[in-house]
Length: 151
Image (cartoon, rainbow, N blue to C red; front, side, top):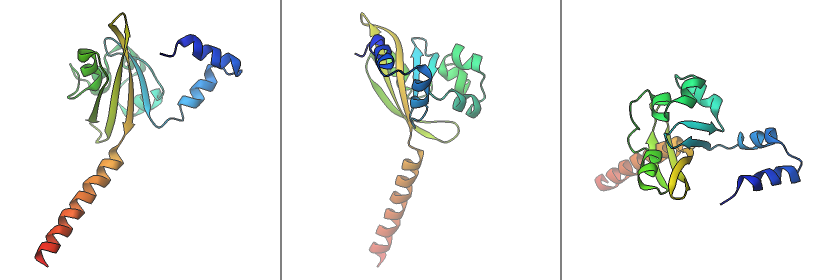
């Protein structure tokens, strides 16, 4: 496990500050969350994306569980890897379809101290385009097989 002190030492050794860190992680295509044990967002590398994309405020985003802040639900979304990770205490992964139609591959890593979960790292990758291409290829393959059978 990487300790926070090693991160600070690395930054100091290379004469970097936290703004440099933010510039680096903001370039990631992946969305990274730090969530507490109650599924509230503590930090994300894409805050502005969520505040713009979803009908939420900064106060809701950080003070309510993610399912309430982002989707206005009273409980976790179906197949939520963070919620499952909270239940199992293990890495969980799932494809999650968002209300806007995007599909994310979401992974949740529980953070533990003395076997007690105190939070989660969640990483989300947008796989919408990949799924659409796969769907289109499957459709074209079925159509081609139908033509081959008829011919």
